[in-house]
Length: 226
Length: 140
Image (cartoon, rainbow over all chains, first blue to last red; front, side):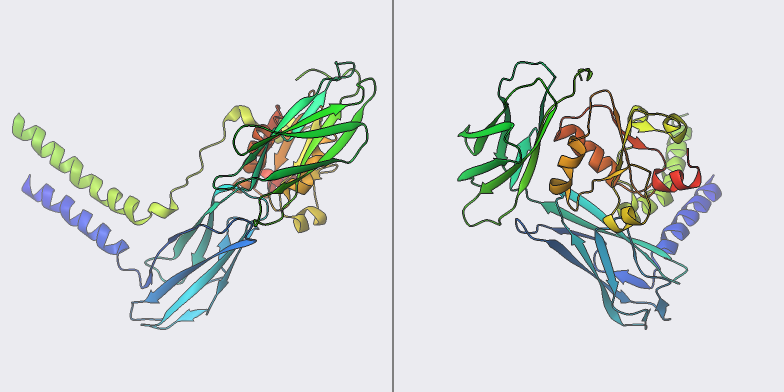
């Protein structure tokens, strides 16, 4: 029994030791970023050091999990004792909430050939339209429908300006609950198909100027009810 | 009997050590994405010949411009606000919206599908199994 236990223990120790002998040591493999409201991108710098005895070569350019993230290698080969970094730039675009993007790095280090670096970005939202789409069935009573414009966390909305791309729809704004505005959208009639894009410009004082869009439609006759 | 149980427990514990070590060491590699429910997926076989589909391409614009599913509309998170109205302008409740991105592993199709349901309130939104790679390999 003792022999079996020793055997298992040895196997366990060997296994753990084998994974711990990577030559390229990363300071952090996950970086969390909180870009400012309206920032176009978020940048994370992953630092490494070659703590082994032999040079480590990157086999290829880092692969990112999303076309929205670009990762740049500082050098292709890292000498023993040398330090370096990979800069990852995540283009935020219209993304919101928690975004996780990975960067896969491949080296010729046999102990640790692949490393996955994670960029976690918490993207603050200026405005949320709920819903971003209102529609009427053909022949439905042309009553106003409401789109709620909600301020993002930590944002104070002073006003919301809405314009309709078509005179077939009117959009009136009225203050709602704290930090919210009601956009009441109404078609002139519902006898024929109509379509409009509503351009929503929130005024958050000194915050970034960003435009949002919502849509309003009168569906063609014969359209199924959702 | 007690001793046998104790020894068994110790052996199981020791056997688990390497996997625990690996799990801790590679904790960042563990996928955080919850699998998409089968009911939210559409296979190429299901898409074959269907006339009630609205195709949404969630890839970056340059990939969309290069090649896409015929009739697909571009809608990605780079320009979500600006691109959403064109999708809503052709949507109809009886149509199924099918979103695809580059491959099985890309996450943008599920993000777009999620936002179409949550923000635009659309129903019947599906993700193409295998994404663009699968489409290109086996055009329906």
